[in-house]
Image (cartoon, rainbow, N blue to C red; front, side, top):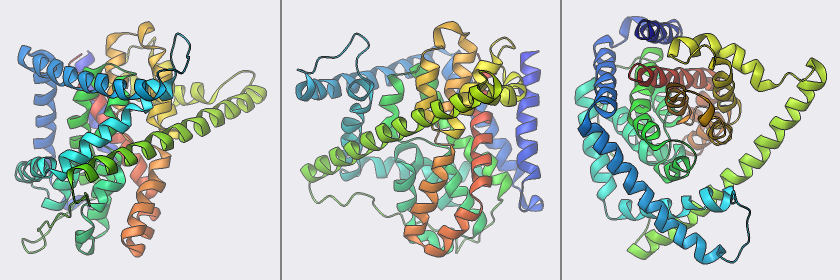
Length: 395
């Protein structure tokens, strides 16, 4: 029964994307089917095979070791600061971002990441039939943040029509930055976060390819990727990464303060008007029907829907913090589905980030992104739902 409901959820998600499509006649259904099959194979391999579990455990152990190294640096600077038993989120989670951003910057300077991304993007283009720029951007978005991924293809922006612009923007919104994955691992189970990374990449491409189909000639299908690293030496790369990581940590902390405080204000207002009813509860009831089809048990679907809704109106960090307090009281299936859903940048604030980045690259195209901002958010949210549903089929 759960599998049938999951298939129905996939059909509804893709059906909504189809209704939103700009050009239904040119949808590449073959490429979409191929990507869906790849998603199913990846999830089955990672969740249901010993080798897959070994790979997840190995990657998770690697991340945890990096977190340990990062914690040593944090302790050196803040070791004398007295904190409570629960620690301080900024110290224990957010400051780890600095070390991860440094590693990412060094790997970029050494041309290791660009090499990996280039050939993964080439392979993705061959498998899915998508243009090279869109494929590269999708892979690049797994490693870098929304802004950095788009900046890396800025030399190609003159070739991007509205549909191609939608796809690269959707890939940026449907992904997460590798520099903050370590922070996510400090809140939610690693196996679901790690599986979410490739699933969300494919889901963003599937949904956006339905909403905004693209066909390009061989002459247009060229990629000239600009190196996002401006470092001239190894140590400059380390310094740039550390500074970038510090900025990200402070930005995330500032956003958390603003969003959590604002959420409390809204809930207070809701409670005053609706006798204790909160915004999260309202969102929970709205999302509950599709959440049930995605595989969340009926008794948990309203609470889970509230978390998913919180992520959409605030950001993934706020939702993850709330969900981390719930994971011991809900089923493993709910934990997996919700965690995969949360592991993306699909929220209102991302519209501004992406539109602002594109505006800095090309003012005219930045205006276009702002124009389809809500459509971008809906598409990215559908992508997150698709990934979570696929994961739920194997839990």
